[in-house]
Length: 388
Image (cartoon, rainbow, N blue to C red; front, side, top):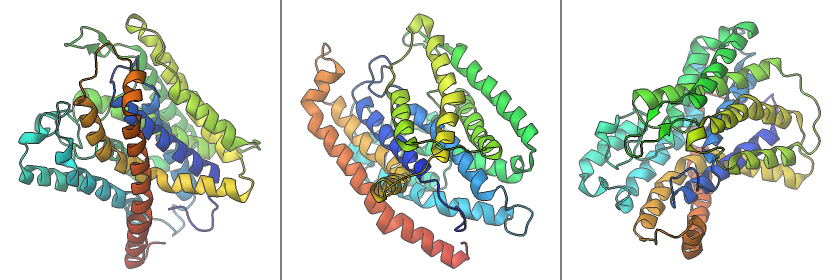
């Protein structure tokens, strides 16, 4: 929680909401195809890396100047982060459990044979944010959090908060810069060097940062690489930030974000590294620049302020409640037996009403979850634990 004596960066709130909506669009269209050369909002998964930059910046803004002054200790820091983040993790997992069996389909072949007791066990593990290996999968996609896949990024977000609270908050700016530089090198290495060969297709695996949601060595490497640079680059940006004045910052940052996310896959299978360079540039340079511009801008007019606040408020609920519904949507699409000659646009033309229904349902459920659950629960816990 940002202390009440500090103003919100309204534009950053709005940009977080824009990125969350892009994630929702990305997941809706991903139901039609997993081929990176056919997807709409092809680079929508980079929203996670943008979220990490925002998180690092906001953590620095909210807490960096409070340590060692009697205002903050480890216990209070971790308590505040849990209160802010975990209620919606619980909501996402419960929703995933309630809707689990509605996703039974060719796309998720393990659901039909999963007993209720086992699903409920995974609910408990999910609420604790305990990752499970692919060998324990009960859906068919090998996710570490099979009831609500996006919780993989919360798993890493928690790790970043622990690293910050225990160690990295004590780093000098120079030492933090060294860490960020090394993490940037790791990001480039991840995206431009082959990670292996796909057994099914014989194609090179690499050229992107897509991954982190499976609990195995390869995905853990991807997850930590995706975490360390963006999160601590955001923290470094806050520490170095001599903000300027950027006119129409929300508009320009939104346009740039959307362009980054909808940009098609760069290169082909033989030149996978070209897409790797694109993603490295976006993560290392463009996302910090967008956050800097957003922090440097001002929202003018009550309507613009309300839009930014609304987008910021629903961003976290949208991110955590969308996938239990997306599971049902993806399962539905997998049952349609579309002709193999049909393009993604042809498939969408036949099922656009379903995509609209998913979008409206997720946004509506996010607003309800925010107002009737997340905000009241956080206030109640804060009051009971005297956390302000």
